[in-house]
Image 1 (tube, one colour):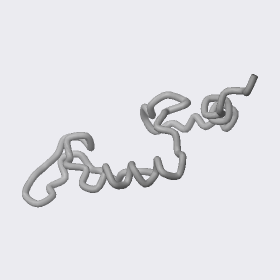
Image 2 (cartoon, rainbow, N blue to C red; image 1 turned 180 degrees about the vertical axis):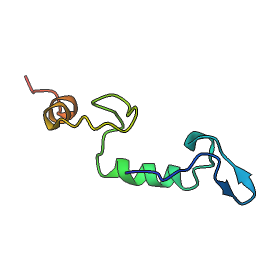
Image 3 (spheres, rainbow, N blue to C red; image 1 turned 90 degrees about the vertical axis):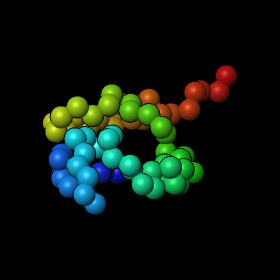
Image 4 (tube, rainbow, N blue to C red; image 1 turned 120 degrees about the vertical axis):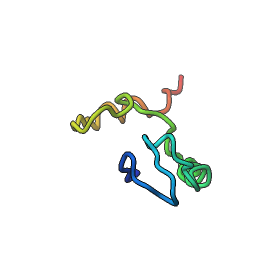
Amino acid sequence: MEALFFPWCRVGGKTYESLVDTPCKGWDELHGWVASWGVADAWPMGKPNGLTGKRDERIWRISLSPPAKS
């Protein structure tokens, strides 16, 4: 999921410096829907920082797999 945001873009007569400053209308409903599909509320590779890709499927599989049954 991505959010398209342009710093200082004017919306409804208001400007926002960063995405977290916006009202994020509908976020609670969207987040609830995503969670209902079992999508983890985590950043297995750390919160994104910048635009460089650092994908590693192995980290996702290890980080999000349920604990082994004993």
